[in-house]
Amino acid sequence: MSNTPNRASNPAGKPRRKEITLDLPTARQMLPLVRSIVSDIVTFRQALTTLAPEQERLDRHRRELAWQERQRRYQLRDEITAAEKSITNAVAELNILGVSLLDAEAGEVDFPTKVNGRPAAFTWKLGDDAVRFWHYSGEEQRRPIPNDWDEPHAVTVKPVRLRGQP
Image 1: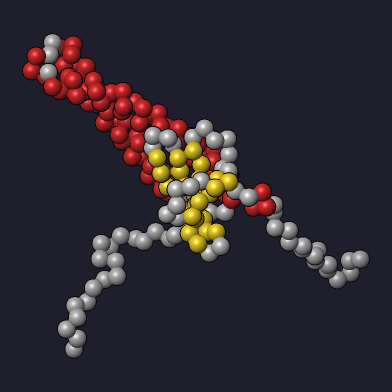
Image 2 (image 1 turned 90 degrees about the vertical axis):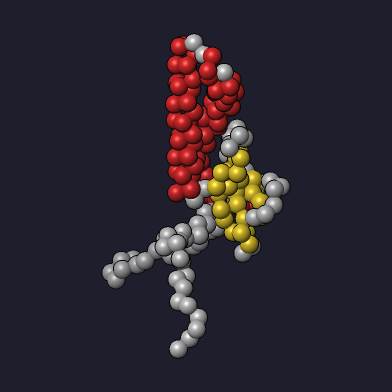
């Protein structure tokens, strides 16, 4: 008998995510949905940036607040909680699509792919009109996507002829 304890290969019991690899046409087709989600994330982040200082000010003076200010403090807490929840849900939606959020402030995302067998990503930032850049995993430099990546790889398919057809 072995002295080595039995260990599960996935001790947390969570299902493992299959590694997602997207091609360029798929990334470009996903862009309208991703753009909408990222736009929401950036909007909610901006709201948090605006609301947080007011919340901090009201929290510091909470014992001296008049009723209207107390009411505003509670309202801010609810608005901040709702914005944080919306950001969490939007990031989860991107994750389900296989897209990674790189920068919530700038609205930059990665579409995972492989280039020459190496992990890479097509990258897009809010304000870009299309997916036009890529980078290898671990690199920050956004490289322009070469024009020949847009060309469809021509596959010649011979039509099937059935017996009796010319």
